[in-house]
Amino acid sequence: MNPSLPFIELARQGLWIYEKGLKLLVYALNIVAGLGILTMMVVTCLDIVMRIFGTALIGAYDIVKLTGAVTIACALPYTTAVKGHVAIEFFFLKLNRYGRIVVDSVCRSITMMMFGFLSWRCIQYGISLKVNGEVTPTLQLPTFWVLYVIAFSCGVVVLVTFYHLLRPGKEMIKP
Image: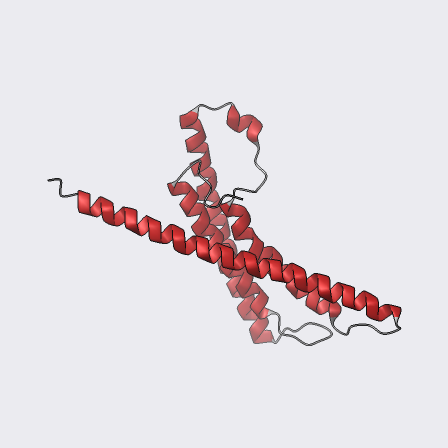
């Protein structure tokens, strides 16, 4: 009996747990993004209707601004999971299978480093906003937490990209 078989089976189970947990997290963030779009629509429509009657929704701009940032950040992992980003196919298709795997692996490694760095910088900036007491102009809502959401989403993008690195050519989620 091959002594490495239990290790291979354990690695396969670990990858399965990683994939299922990550999919759950990506779907949860996508729901938050959808709720963010819904919130922006409701606030904007309510503000327009209220302006027809001579008043405005106080803080509508603040709410839409914060919700927009959270929505974009939370949609990023799902877009990465379904491989929905724009890709330059012309050059890529000229390569053979081995060349595609190499270029794809290099690009994904760079993507992981970039989003890891972005996550780290967002956390640092969020901490500085919290220390300085930065708030929105109208409603005086704290803004530091938005940077934490962006940092978390960038971290999830790193995990999704790592999944794609382990399984080249396969989407994590079918759109």
